Image 1: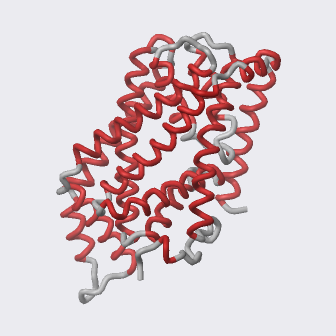
Image 2 (image 1 turned 30 degrees about the vertical axis):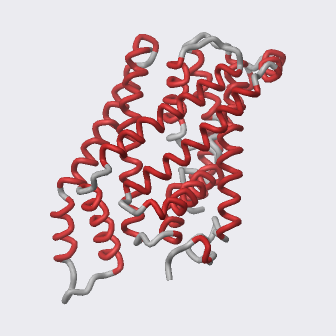
Image 3 (image 1 turned 135 degrees about the horizontal axis):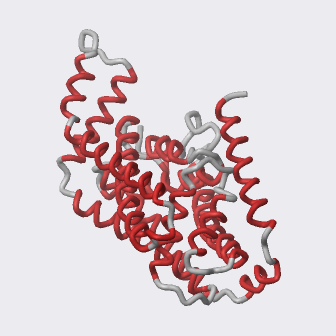
Length: 329
């Protein structure tokens, strides 16, 4: 049995255990009553904001890759394929799929595709760290301090990683070039050089302030739509409640689980809303609605892009891409 299958089994077991724990204590009458009282208009607003967040994430990736905005549609297509991949496969395999997709769709080399995606993720980690520390400050006396230490480590590593990549890009470029034999590069060296060149380009870009601003807006909008779903349930909670749920969700989906984050999504919402004295049965109902909104939008958009572009999720390296979805010769 290969590592991929073991990871799927391990993640599925964790999800099943978490679901058994959650649903064994559920008050089904309270659960269904909560579903019946949902304000659909707030759900609609939340869905629109989710689509806007995907657009902004695609735009940020476009800017991080230092590509002309005329390539925006390719980044949007690749991002949606990535989200769909994360829903279907375990271990956030969608992150790999979106790199493969952007490499197919746009003129980016594989190395530049990888480096831009890595820089994109590092920016997320930094901002996640900032908002997580804010949540720890708000709920510090009710959250295990060890969680705070772990977040501080991740936050620090993200900043150090980004600074190191930017500061030593020239040095790494020279070292990789020096490994060439008679001026010829192996395939991996070529990919590495292209990736480092992507970091060098980003370092000299004028988009850095814009990228950071977009990143903060993305997270605020994420917390806003999560808060809108809270309002849809009729709970009179402040915006910080949406922020708390959002941070708990981001931390929870980093652990192994079944495809679609089933189980960990529910536990994250139960723990986050428990800080605001929301009953577990109501929190589970909320988690399911929250998950359905994001998965419906990401799933539909991802499937439409996949079908339109002829992208094969299981054999993405070999899949032919239609001319309307690529600029490569």
